[in-house]
Structure formats: C-alpha cells, structure tokens
Length: 227
Image (cartoon, rainbow, N blue to C red; front, side, top):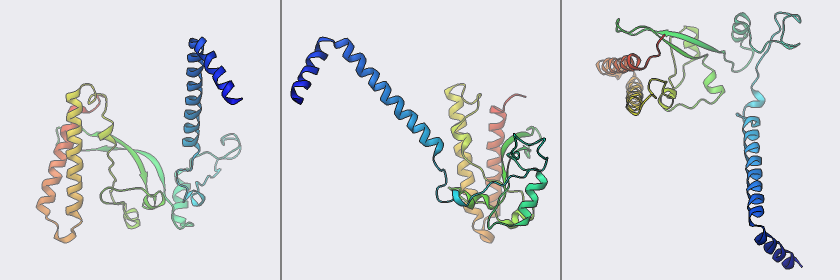
C-alpha cells in the first residue's frame, strides 16, 4: 500500500512540476525560518555562565522612594554612594563594581592632542567572577584597588573593528591592521619582559614603551575621528 501511494505521489508531482517546486521551496523556507528562530531563542535565553549564574547577584536599592522608582521597581543601577558602600562592606566572598567610563588619554608628544577612550571600569574581583580569559598577563589585585593604582586591561577589539577612516579603502585597512598587530606584539613583549621582575631589562622596557607610544601616536594621527 505504501508503495502505491508513493508511486502515485511521484506521478502527481511529475504532472505539476511548477507546483511541486513551489511547495518544496516553501517547505525549505519554513524549516530554515524555524531553525533560525530556534537558534536566536537559544542564544538569547541560554545561560552565559551556567557554572556560576546561581551564585551571581546584581543588587538593587530603592533609594528614591516609590514616587521616583522604575514602575514600582528599584532603578537598574546603583548610585555611587550605595555601590561603594556595598563594595567596602565585603558581605560577599567576591564582589565588583562595574560601570561605563570615558578617559582622556594624553601622549608624551605635545603635538598629539588628547584622545578620548571608552571602556568599562571594574574592580579586581571582576576577572575571577566572570572567568575573563587572558592571552597575556592578567588582571590586577585588591591591593591595586586599595591604592588607586592606574591599571588597565587592553583587548584586541580595535584590530577587528577598524573605524570609518580606516575602513574607507584597502590600503587604510591594511595600515590599521599592521599597526594594531605591531602594538599587540609590543604589548606581549612588554608583559614578558616585565614578568622577569627585578631582572627585567629597564632599557629594553623603555625602548618598547617608546615604540608602542609611537605606534599609538601614528595611528591616532591618521585615523582619529574629526571633532
């Protein structure tokens, strides 16, 4: 019986080739749409830190009263005073501050104007709390936080996402990539030499720092956004 119905379906499909092709295309689009929808749903609802999500908490404090809060709920961000107070209280085994920040970076070259850099300001526990991977070096310590040390973690975001001026043509993009790769290599060498501690070659460190500064200045001069 099944063979008969299959043969009947094949003969019917052969008589209406256009309709058969249309049905196949529609089914293919339907399956593809379902798979894309499922993939998007899975990506947006999956647990980014399954091993830690049950132990990570984002505190909220209603410090303005019901009249000014967000539809009956505390505002999603803490005030500076509340955040710092919670951080200093040390009521959790690990805790971190996290907020957007913008810095003005000045060059040693007086001819190069200060540049604005965006990033996230965090405290020492952030890296272990969120298992931040490092290719080279590492984060800072709680002592650095206590001493208000000027420290930063640099990523390779700029290498893969050139700005508008760098992406305008192939030559500019290649120059951006070359300078970015050179800067990454110099940073790696700086980390390796600095890790030697007291035996590090100070003259070599100064040479690498000057080279890195030159690369940054050249890149900034060529590709910085116009005000």
